[in-house]
Image 1: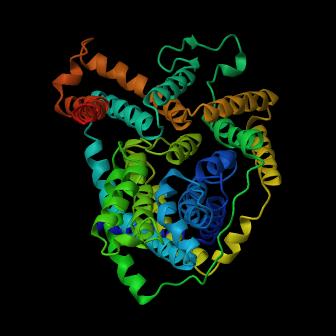
Image 2 (image 1 turned 180 degrees about the horizontal axis):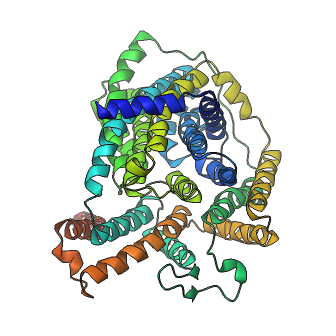
Image 3 (image 1 turned 60 degrees about the horizontal axis):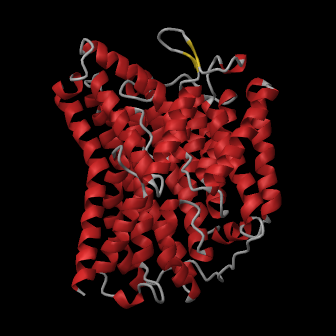
Length: 503
């Protein structure tokens, strides 16, 4: 009953005219960003982070959440019509969606994608409502050793999941951890790694680094390497599904929803794995296997798109209850919380209950808004695909420059932002993931503090991590994440070599 009461209070806050306006603007902007190829919610949220200096916390969090989920809805449009996924989670949607569009069924693919996103998002939000407070309740009982191991698990999984090369992911993470150490030591007050530059005494601004790496880096990379590429657009058809397509879609929506949620809700999550698993499941269960990879099977769009949106919604669980982001955009939204002096974690449901429940309530409202925006207005979003890239990315650079300068009116910040943008270009060029840098900057200082506290509890002994059951279990999971994939790859290579030798 207490849970229902808090949710109703959240709806009362989220349904105020100002917050409804922020939710609508966020959903519309997110959908537009999702439709435009090459852009994504991480770039957009990073570019708009400076508004946290002017806007009330609840309104800005509802706004950023609308962008996040709106981009997931809109990303399927480019995947289906252009075969150009805006986010990694939409890659699988492109496999069958683009083939459906080429065979004249783009409308059915867009319809099952939008409705599946609504179904998955709504069910996943209900699960967040039920389980997030429960996780927060038990998380309060964790101590510094457990929190440190949770952060080590986040470091391990983020570097593995968000990049194709573990070595490159670890390198990016180390860069982020080093950047998080710049400034004054939070315990001893010692100046660290400032190079004698007084502007570094307060540390590097996560907002500035995020805008530089994502917004500026993306714009410069596109101008340098992708500015002349052209994509062919499939023809649109009426957005509707036949009765047969409804029958084939709804079981895939449900399977995808319950497959995606656990992956988003744990620190080892991500939307890539459940979307591929959902696609494999639908391909195995479907009686229309001949359509997969040829004319396009609607289950291959419905299941992965539901899994993607369910996983994205579930990222709120570790972010709000543990302060651990499991995606690039979640990491940037976490930095927005910190701009307000709010640290997500187990205490958040007590110290900022109004904000948390308004944010959760806004997800229910946003899902309805997004369904309305994506089904009747899909023709409008398709027209955005005709915007030339040059003015689009020039506008991004202008917004990024004005936003970062507006934070502290510092020209030094602008030079630093563009220098970081050039680093972002190099990272894109050589396939280094940018997300671990932000995760390292945000979680690094917290991990350092928890490590110091844990060692103090253990009276200087590192065995404290083995003496406590939860931290020992988490350590075992970290080792498994590092070792198991390599053992499996080694066994696969050995089996292939044996087969080749026998042949």
